[in-house]
Amino acid sequence: ILSYSSGLNITQTFYFNATSSWYVKSPYNLSWSFPNGQTITGMSITYQFPVYSELNTVIATFSYDNTTYTKDLSVRMVPAIPSISWSLPTQIPTGTMLSLHANITDPDSSAFTFDWNVNGTLYTGNGATVLFSNQGKYNIELTVTDSLGASASMNKTITVLTPGHSSSITISISKSTSGPNIYFHIHIDSLSKISLVEAYIQATPVTIHKVSGNSTNAEYNVTISQRDYSAGVYSLVIDVFASNGASNSATESFSVSSQYSTSTFNLVAFFGGIDNMIMIILTLAGVIATLIFTKPKPTEIDVNGTVLEGRKGKPVKVIKTPKKRGRKI
Image 1 (cartoon, rainbow, N blue to C red):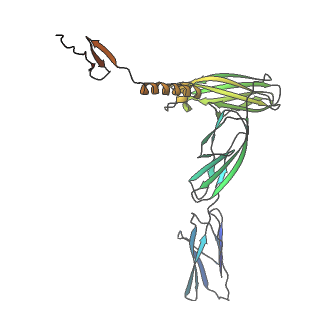
Image 2: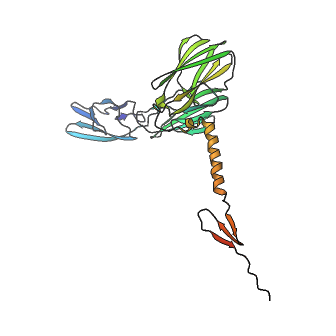
Image 3: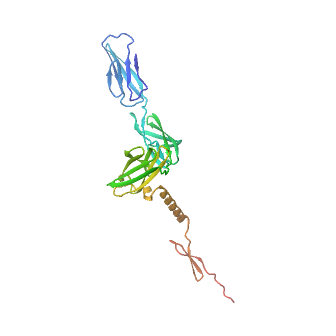
C-alpha cells in the first residue's frame, strides 16, 4: 500500500511511504524515481521538489523475487504564497507624494503584479506614486499576485496631517557642501514632546537621522547627493509634529550643480516647481492656439483704382479693377 503527500508547496517536505499488505520475505527493494531523474530507495522517505510543477509523476518500483512492479503516482503541488515586506511612515504632512514600493520573497516565482487600494482608489505597479492632498487617515492595502496565481495581501494605515505654524516649535536649518554631497543640519526646539519629524524634497520623503538631543530639543541630519537629482533649484522641507497636536514647518532651498547632476533633464526643477511648470505650459498652449486659429489679414493696395491683395508667402492678385466709362456723343 503506497501513501504520499499532496497539495504542498515547494518549501515543504513531501513524504512517501510503502506498507506491505502481506508478509514479504527479504530480500526486496523499493525505489522512488522523481521527475528530475533522482531516485531514492526506502520504504519510507521524504523529498523536497527542487522546482515547481503542478503535477509531478513519481514512479514507485518494487523488486522482489526477480519480479518488478511499478506504479505511477501523480503528486500535486500548489504555488507558494508570496511574502510581502514594505515600510510606510505612520504620519505624513498634506501634500506629500509617496512612492509605494514593496519587497517580495517567493521561492517559485519571480514575476508579480502589484495592486494598491488607498481608501478605495486603485493603483498598480511596484512604485506606484500617490499624492496625499487631504488630511485624514488612509488605509492602504497591497495585494501581490505571482505568475502562478498565488497571492498575498497586507494592510497598513497612515495618518495625513496639515502642518501648522505653531510658535511653540522652532526649526533652524543650516547646510554645507562637500563635493557632490549637501549636508543639512536641523535643530528643533519644542515646548511639548516631539512626536514626528519628516523631511521632503519636492513632496518626496528623504531620510532624516536624529543625531543628538532629547524629546523636546534635538539635532537632526539630512544628507543628499547631487548625483541623484537633475541640475536646478530644490527645497528641503522639514515638518515637525508635537505630542500636543502642535506642528511647524521650515524650508531650505538648495541648488544642484550641473557638474554633479544626473544626465536626465528634470522639467519640474527647471521651471522651479510643479505649479510654475503648469502655469507656463498653459500660457504657451494659449499662445500656440492663438497663432493657429487666428488668420493674418491680407494687405490691400489701391493703384489708380486697381486694388491689389497681398498675403505672406502667396503671389499678389487683383481683386478689383476700375469700371470703364462709355464716351458721350
